[in-house]
Image 1 (cartoon, rainbow, N blue to C red):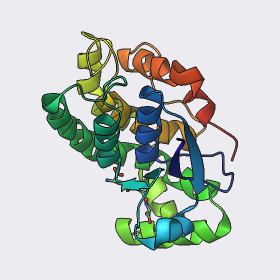
Image 2 (image 1 turned 180 degrees about the horizontal axis):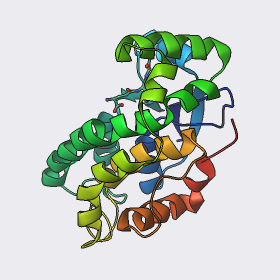
Image 3 (image 1 turned 60 degrees about the vertical axis):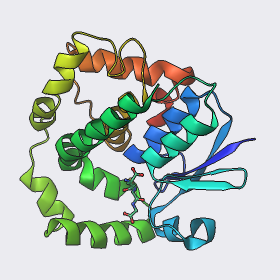
Image 4 (image 1 turned 180 degrees about the vertical axis):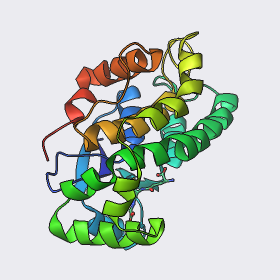
Length: 230
Ligand SMILES: N[C@@H](CCC(=O)N[C@@H](CS)C(=O)NCC(=O)O)C(=O)O
C-alpha cells in the first residue's frame, strides 16, 4: 500500500517547503514505506480529503486518514511497529514534545525572519495573496516591513541552535546513535529554510552542519534533492 502525503508546495509543485511536511516525509522514509507526495498549494489545503482539515501534513494510508505531524508519527509507529522505530518507546515519545516545542518557539521564528519573503515569492499568485493576507495579519506589518526589520546574517539562528550544537558534540543524533522522529522535527525546521532560501546559513564548522548534512543524504538524498528552483 502506498501512503499518500499531502505536502505544501510553491508555484513549482516540486518545491516542497513545509517544516511539518518534511518531518512526516522523513518519518515515512525512516519506516521504509512506499509513499507518494500530493503537492498542495496553500489555497487548496482546505479542499483535501473532503475539506475536514485546515492544515497539512495529512496522510492517507488505505482507508485511514491522519493529520498533524506528531499524530502521523505516532500512527506510523503503532501501525508499522516492526519497522525501525521513530520513538522506540513512550519515554522518547514524551521527550519529543519538548523538542517540538523548542523547535517551534526557538527555531521557527528565526527561520521566518530569514525567509518569509522568499516563501511568498515562490508561491503562485493566488497563494501569494492568501499568504500575504494571513501572515500580515499574524505579524501586524507588511511582509516587506517584517523582512526589512530582520538582518539576514543568520546570527539569531546560530544563537538559537546552541543547545543542539552542544548535544551533537557529544552524540551523533538527538536520538543517540541513530536518528529518531525528534531529529526529523529539527531537520524539518532547517529544511524549511533550505528549501525556501538560496542562502546557506549553517556554519560548516559546526556539529549541527554535519548532522544536517548527514540527514540530507539519508533515503537516497531525499532531503538534498528538496532544494529546487522557484
Ligand atoms: N502542528 C501542526 C502544524 C501544521 C501546520 O502549521 N501546517 C501549515 C503548513 S507548514 C499549514 O497547513 N498552513 C496552512 C495555512 O497557513 O493556512 C503539525 O505539526 O502538523
